[in-house]
Length: 201
Image 1 (cartoon, rainbow, N blue to C red):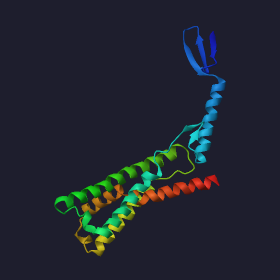
Image 2 (image 1 turned 30 degrees about the horizontal axis):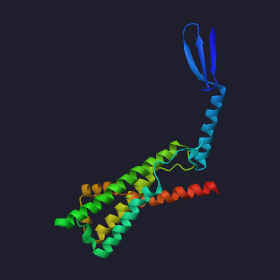
Image 3 (image 1 turned 90 degrees about the horizontal axis):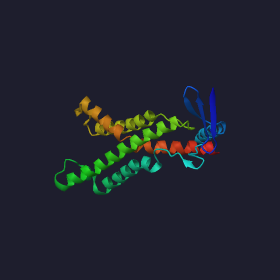
Image 4 (image 1 turned 90 degrees about the vertical axis):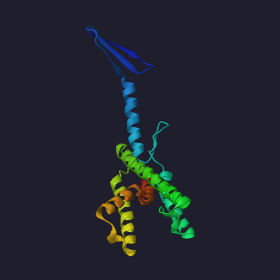
């Protein structure tokens, strides 16, 4: 023989039997409420909304993180035009060499962080059943390929490509993967906004 007790405020049904076994179950009202909120979450995720019943479900990354490496790279290009490329010469001695290492290290660290966050955001969108499910490798490897080809073309124009070994070129491609968000970040952010605007129309 089993005995059931309902605890209305907590929405829990307690069931016990003669052999001492007991279990807790949600009442039908609570189960329906949970089902409604889950359905609401999925519907709003498909529409690009990131909140359910006032609770924020934030994306792991915002546009500032995705665009920061690109903005910094553009600033470095401007500095190189104004002051000359020697500013980024890590082979220079003294303070000039230290400054070059700090500048390039900052770009490398910021790009690595942004690239990792781009991958996290792409996985979040897939797991949350959003309207857009991007493949992170398409953006990360695509950005890396653009940077790597550009670097190889620069070496070819300068007549230095033949002096690089296969291992050195592979190392350059690995660095290009780390820096890929300088190219992929703006493209990813623009695609995300375009998808959201298309769903809202």
